[in-house]
Image 1: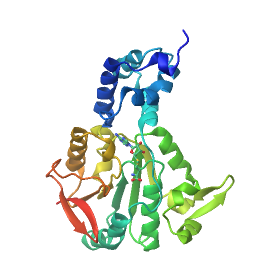
Image 2 (image 1 turned 90 degrees about the horizontal axis):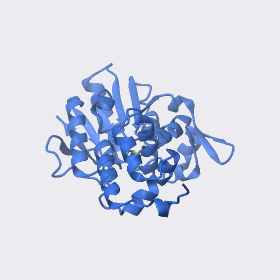
Image 3 (image 1 turned 60 degrees about the vertical axis):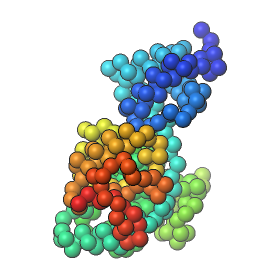
Length: 280
Ligand SMILES: C[S@@+](CC[C@H](N)C(=O)[O-])C[C@H]1O[C@@H](n2cnc3c(N)ncnc32)[C@H](O)[C@@H]1O
């Protein structure tokens, strides 16, 4: 049978099933989307799986034992991986100027663990590593930076460490020259001294057993991901984070995001000029 995105369509009944299943498993909220928009994002996956209906695709995702690979493809298809170096630096400055010095005083010699929980193509954890290095802290204390994302394709790019001009729109030029080497095709490679300091992995933040270890980090950066989540999924994620975060433990979300009315487990504090949620 020959079919196109129009002939396939996304009937309302399949849309509701897929929308709710995707929300349950990924946290991502498609309530404000029309069926056509979600259909456009998923159409190529339906075809790649050899189906001619969205309902068959739903059954694969929901019931097939071997659906894990398809969930990875779906994650790549539905996520927004927009990010850049030196994005919202207030919290990174607070980390360098306040949280790390406090930690060194409180726990001398102990490893500081930082987790970038939705790192996309890696610009956030690399910015954190560069900022620590600029302050002379990366080699001053044992520090481990973890970076994860649910999108395998984003993570593959993060692991490759190659970036185009768009990623550098906010980072001072002298830092770009110091930490990146220009390669062919107008790309820049992060220097290994920084890239190797980051431990990369795939993890879905609303699945407890995928993040239970990562969430024990002293500081979690989970920025510009809750904007795509519905309230229940944000609550669920915060519950998991809170369960494993140490005390004190710090959570940075983006300036456009808020946990107001979603949790009273973490306290919003102003630290070094930035707003950070604290488990204390
Ligand atoms: C807009 S990017 C944010 C990147 C970076 N944190 C920043 O602030 O620039 C959002 C990222 O969240 C990831 N994401 C979405 N849902 C996720 C989930 N359930 N678990 C882990 N990552 C998820 C996407 O794959 C995407 O890379």
